[in-house]
Image (cartoon, rainbow, N blue to C red; front, side, top):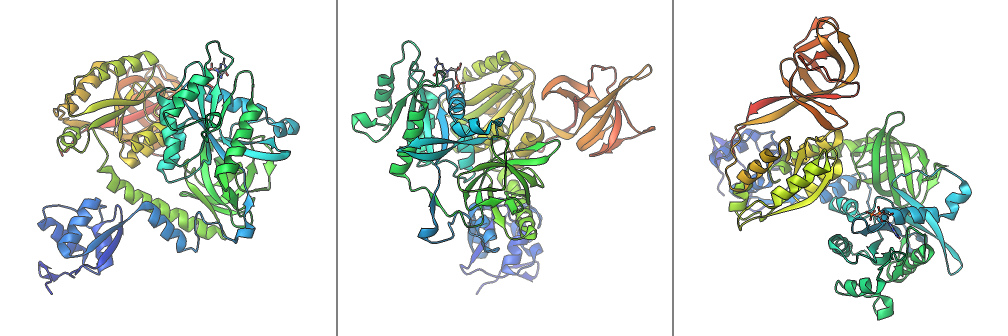
Length: 613
Ligand code: GDP
């Protein structure tokens, strides 16, 4: 047996033994698995031409290289497997109905509404909600919690249906990308006056890929020129053949605006569920399900709408949702009624989590608060590690030319967000007209007005896109998500500069010397007027640090209102300060710039030389 020796240290030799490591593991983790000295592994990597430290998280390729060199079989454990193992170590099996056949009870179908923009998805969701007899009786004020339940009568039976009320396949896909299955049935909305459009096909493909049965709602039949027959014909080409033509897809002609045939549509959903799905769950077990929406409420803390998929969720339960945990303090339904318990397919808004989970995170109820906390903590540690490893594989403008040359990318996906629709359109127009050669195709996946949101980042992540912010920024959770996942977000305030940079990147000419490094952000709480200094901003540093003499920009409602400012004055109480950290208050002056308001955000950054790859 050969044992490589590095600097006199003997190394274990694998002989084909398997080492299991998670994505983002470090040499230290590797060393621990094979009982070796981490420093020796660093030397091995060095001899192989890679400088890495023992604790730094490395890419899968690096782990593979090291394993090959040392004669080990490497098995990279996927996120899902790892999570399953984590839960198994606590004796939890996510996704399992715990119980026998006879403990399974029917549960309502969960429905997502999809279709082309403007075909009436939102309107339909409103119409269905209004048809809800139960809400009417309760007389409650309905609120959007991300999902709602209605009851419809089919063959003399009262049948509930759960609707996810974020329309569109984007949310659906974002969840699916994260391994969550939220939807049993998709309603595909097609406007009868417009027919099948690109996003109709996209939605249909998403549903098919997920193996979700489709019910077609042919909408806007009240409009002149509506041609429901044509829609049926068009969809035949995509494998959706109407029952009346001998197929097995139910088509219902509706008008969301006039509330026409909504009951028939609901009936079609129930019948399709009965015909093609066996929707049952054990209501007795500990509850499990997924988060559909979550946000931070100023007064009530973290709030999440969860969909119970099996079991019954009760007030007082200890719960883990992704890397958030807590104890269910209260549950509300979509009518604002508080609930003591929620069974399978019931969406509820829940209070009591210590932090805000993400849409698509799974939730489980565990027997002790401590278990909940441990699982949550293990998950966030793991996500942090994986994020480092992942950063490397995402597309960025800098290495675009290399990726193209290597043939690993043939399409540059872009997401464009801007402050006004005019500039977004102008930018999109100019970009798609770029002559980018044969090797690569430029595609705008999404464009919109407003700040860069988490959903933009999700989309970018799912399709390796670069996000362009024109006079808008990513803030809060969106920025954190982009940082964590290594999504390249580019900010511009001049159209030609954006175009030039992308063109150069495509041609392999982009060699940025400096990059912007964000230092922190502060929120303006108060504005003091001083005859000597002009307007002084009384701020609270929200994250990072604010440092004197660094660059700054001013954001109002997520939009950049001033660029290239300088933090000229910085004070803590009465003293000058060089920097002020997160959580502290300070007084800031921006030189001669005085147009500041309460709630504005001062974002600070430095220009640092960028190491060339
Ligand atoms: P979404 O983008 O698919 O969510 O579409 P919306 O629900 O926002 O509807 C787009 C537009 O079509 C709105 O102006 C609606 O009022 C209108 N609309 C929706 N359903 C109907 C319908 O059944 N008949 C008519 N005439 N207009 C409709």
